[in-house]
View 1 (cartoon, rainbow, N blue to C red):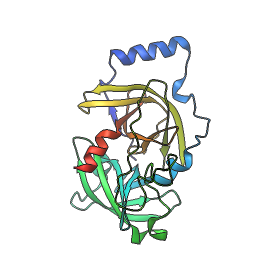
View 2 (cartoon, rainbow, N blue to C red):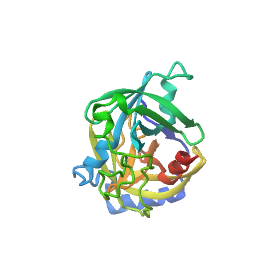
View 3 (cartoon, rainbow, N blue to C red):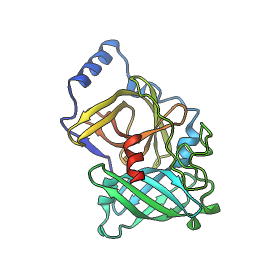
View 4 (cartoon, rainbow, N blue to C red):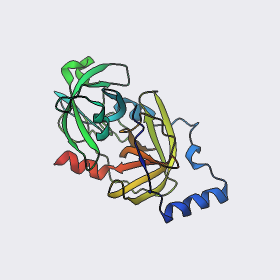
Length: 244
């Protein structure tokens, strides 16, 4: 199963400062909220999927939907588990256990992002029970991801240190709570600014969505630091990739 990229040489001076402050204050922010159930758990769970590709597994989220298809965003490196790069054998498992084949719409090695398509005709109720992240059944209820062809990106949210966040392990049906550590820090491994959070991360969680307490989709988990912090690509970059 995919554990995600281990971002070597990622920890910079700012990160050391944050870790030092946390150690001095005795704050275990990584597990600060791990025993709490977020009010947005149904939203996080219903849009979340498990993705299997050959000998690799990961997670993803429904990010866009229409009457004919669900579009799922996931981590691009999950596709490395396929022995046939031209037509990888992709299978998606939804929160209720339903399974369906998927195909790759497009991917970016640079961003480590892939878009998958699942036809609604292959799903129970033609996929109506599976909302897009922040769609019509989400916490904000704005209908941005409802049946139609709209993207399911949420409103702009300002990320700040110690902001509560949530990640779901679709393989184990487990939602983890944590906090933002660094809202934006440059990663040499990814070549761009990334979000770093104190939050539990299990093997196979790459591609899962990063959410706030209101159910806003903030980004996608791509890996961990050497110290185990969650490293996520922010949603604006994913939105740009969807729009291209």
